[in-house]
Amino acid sequence: MGLYLEIPVLNKQFPFRSFINQGHQLVSPHWHKEVEIIYVFKGSINIGVNDEPIHIKKGEILFINGGDIHYILASSDSERLVIQFDLTFFQEISTMNVIEKNLRDAFSQMKNSSTEWNKTTKDKMVKIIEDIHKENTKKQEGYPFVIKAKLYEMMALIFREIPEKESEDTSDSQLTKTQETLEKLDQIFSYVENHYKEGITLQDIAKYSGFSTYYFTKFFKKNTGTTFIKFLNEYRLNKAKWILLNGNYTVTEIAEMAGFTSVKTFHHLFKEVMGVSPLKYRKTISGNN
Image (cartoon, rainbow, N blue to C red; front, side, top):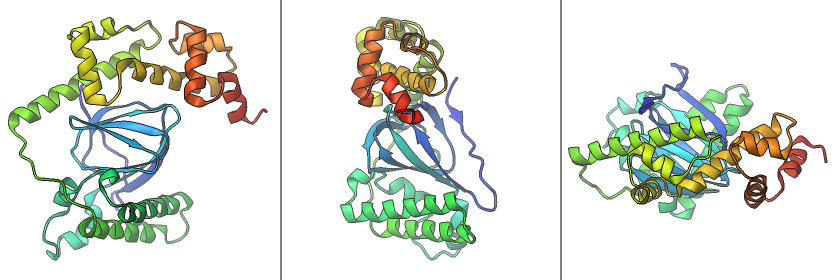
């Protein structure tokens, strides 16, 4: 598949959007020029930004700068709010030469995870993010003005309160290594998407990736923050959740369709992750108690 450029569908006059993503969506390595904000309000997710794996859980925020290559591995029960916007949003201020550094530098130099901010700053940012999404969802008269005002408030918070990361030099060889790592991960994710119904073993995926089993295990954990087996099970569970809610299949059929070779294993993993059995989950979500 290769690393791909994502082009969000944004209004040229109002280059912004917000939406909710759930755990069943695997996001392969990609990049876009827009800034992206991820706020996790349920569960947890592992995100790779360039070659750095980052784990964020409920209540945490991550900023992804435009041009950064990133992917997302989400837990089955996770939900996250995503905000994307183009920096042309702030064109009026950026052309006035009244700030010392440009906006792109502000995002690239800030500590992008709320785990590195103080609680007061994080709470302020959460409030801004929630207000923005609320306005964008309700779309009451004048909502674009409120969203723009909130984004400006966000920028002020970034300049005033969010700490900057320590400067670091990135050599050409490091950038090449990062590119190669992300392309290899994309190859692995694509293989899982195409073969999850089959009995994938560590040996299979390691051989496909051109690694020994030992090296593949270390490579995947280092670059995703999780083990391959856990990732594969989470992916299959997400598929099973979708089948449960969009069909009337038996547990045995669902397990097979999601790639589990054992109904007992599927039932155990599902209950362990979701807290209820597959059929109970279906009844709870559909309201047929």
